[in-house]
Image 1 (cartoon, rainbow, N blue to C red):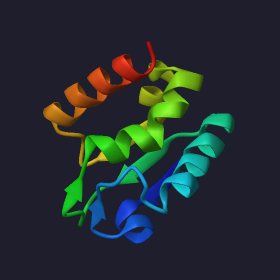
Image 2: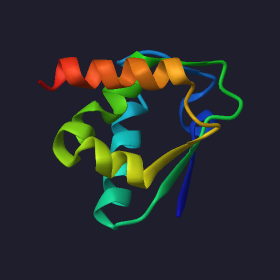
Image 3: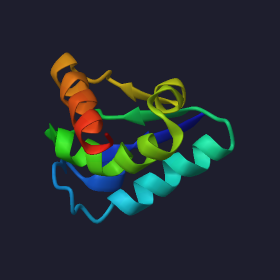
Image 4: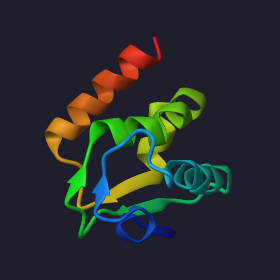
Length: 97
């Protein structure tokens, strides 16, 4: 299992699609997926975490690997709030039709 601390990688605000850490975060997830491992994403200490950031970070990986793969191997602590889950699902459906 790999632990990813967003506060260390991104700072307190994970909000922008253009955040400089997104490419590195995407590469980290891809490596974990390719190795068949699991990734725990630690969101503690964040002041803001948006659907836009999440979609830009994981959207292409979901399109390539599938939602089931991402859900099986990437977990968030604390878990994503229901509204983030709903918006994320909606965003992925619209973006990857």
